[in-house]
Length: 168
Image (cartoon, rainbow, N blue to C red; front, side):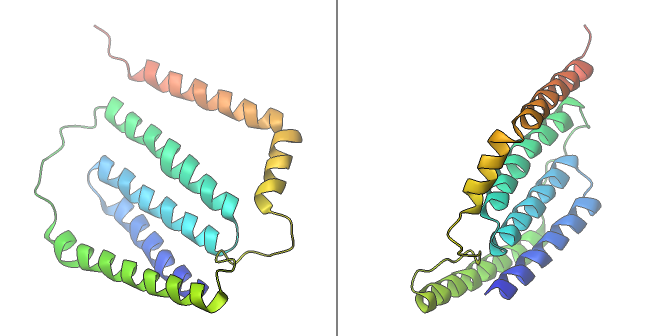
């Protein structure tokens, strides 16, 4: 199961990265980057790093991509050309998504029945949750760098808004 998931989402990650490079519109590139980040989250999850997978989804796919989208829109990258969509998306994308969904459903159901609802993440079962250990270190030993990083990100957002503001 882990090899199949790794191959599927590894190929999806590389395809999203290539699509990111070859897109003409910045918003489409940002959406391709979301596909790459979500694929990486699934790969982390299959390796047993549940906290890293959750952080990947929340921080990178959520917050950072929202910032990228706002920066793209603030910079006025030009008028978006409205299209009806790509024919390739209809002929290859929709069946591809259905195929991947069907394959993943089959793999999950087969593994769940074979393991008897055991740990599907593939992580180590040594009695200590990696989420509990990471959160203990993050909020005790690394609290100051964590808070400084959040303040730096806030200053960067404010700076981007001030620089993108148009003078009347």
